[in-house]
Structures are given as structure tokens and as C-alpha cells.
Length: 189
Image (cartoon, rainbow, N blue to C red; front, top):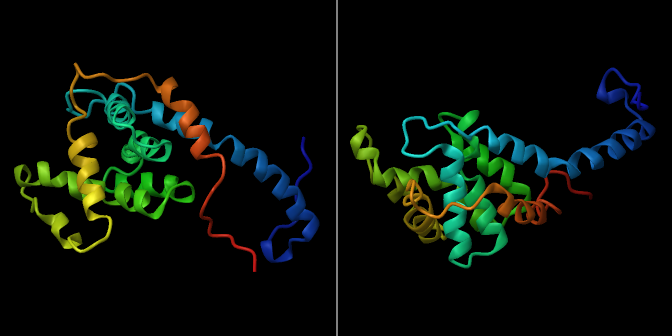
């Protein structure tokens, strides 16, 4: 059994406790790409009434972005954009955005966080919602980027006949993007 901290309340923790925790954290953080891929695989075989399963949709979205010459970060965002479907049935873009936040630009983060509302333009009117809901963001600097993401990659990625690369093609990209966080809530003073 590994050595563990000895406090029962964080306010009673010591620097030695946090040295132990920090060492464990670094190992755990390095396995984040593996955990993300495992969670993404939960979408395999889950059709939810769609023409293709959710994992195929994510892979197809990423394939389209990759074939279009998008950078690694953008392709990883395309791959993970619907990863939140399993846990956030009513707010899946927020889940994906939270996973991606430490590793991606503000533009890509916003794009993933808002993609659901932008995709709604294509179907909200069929379910009694306002398809123009995205218009409330018209003046946002990332509006056009998000509109383009949906139009070029997310919206057309339900085609059972379209090229859909295997998940293994995207693993190296995901590992590169998740190698070093850009943003973290913990900042030294």
C-alpha cells in the first residue's frame, strides 16, 4: 500500500501530506488521456435513435476536421465534442468543454461549449424550440468559428457511408493536446 496523507480535515494537512498527494497526482494526471479514451468508448453502439452511433459521429466529426487540415487541438475538440452525452444528457457541451478547458484555446473552448445551441439551428424548429437561439451570441468573437464548426464538421457527420477513421488514429493527437495544460484553476502567487 502506498504511503498516504494523515489528515482527516484539509485544514489539518501538512506540507509533507501535500508532497505525497502531489506525487500521486502527477501519475494520475498522466493517465488522463487513457481515462478520456475509455469514457469516449462508452459512446460505441449507443445510437440514441441517430443514424450512426455516438462514437462514430465523434470519429466522423474529427475525421472531417483532420482531412480539412485543422490543427491537432481543433481535431481533438471535434473528437470530444459529444463525450458529455453519457453524463450530461441535458448539457453535454458543458461536460466536453470542462474536460477540454485546461488544454485548449479560449476560441476552441467556447466553440465546444456552445456547439449544442449552434447545432440547434438545424433541428430546434422540429422539437418546438427556437432555431435562432444562437443569435444571442451574434456579437461574440467566436460566433463565426462555432457556426463553421457545426456546418463543416458536426452537422454532416451522421453519414454511415462517410469516411470515419478509427479511434486509434486520433489517440496520438489527444495525447499531445493533453500533455500539458494551458489553463488551470491553481495558480502560484
